[in-house]
Amino acid sequence: MCRLLDLPPVLPPVRLPEEAELAAQARRSALLADLRDLADEVRKKTVQTAAVNPALLRLAEEAELVERDDEDLAPGEDVGWLDDLADDSDALDAWEYTFAVVLDTTLEAVSAVLAPRPPSLAVPATDKLLLSRPWCAWLGRQLLRGGF
View 1: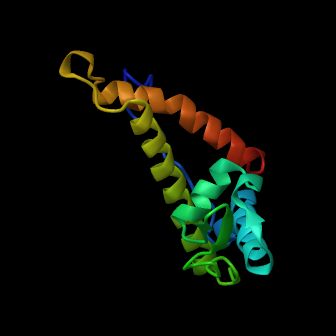
View 2: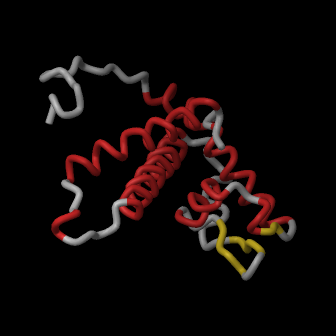
C-alpha cells in the first residue's frame, strides 16, 4: 500500500500542539464559523436553499444544523450545537465531528462517482482510494484557505 500511495515505509512521528492550542485553532476554523453563521442566519430569517454553497449546505445538513423545508432552510435538530465553544473539549469535539462529516461526505461523493458496476468494469478498492486523493486534496485546500 505504501508504494501505491508513494509513501515511505515508515512515517515520521507527528507532534501535535497542546490541547488548548488545538482548541483555539478549532475556534478559529473558517469551516466551523461558516456553519455557525448559516445556523444563526436560518434561526433569524428565511434562507433559500439555492442561496447557500452546496458543499456547505450538505455539511450543515449532515451535522443537523439545518434541514430543507421545500425551497427554504429550517433550523435543524442540532441548530445550537456550535453556539458555545468556550470550553476546550467542546471546541475539539466540534472540530472532530465536523472533520468526520467532511471525510464521510468526501467518501460518499467518491462512492457515488464509482457506483457499482458489472464485475468486468469493477473498480478495485485501491483505485477508489487513489481517486479520492484529488478530492481530499481539493477539500483540504479549501479548508486551509478559509472555508468554502
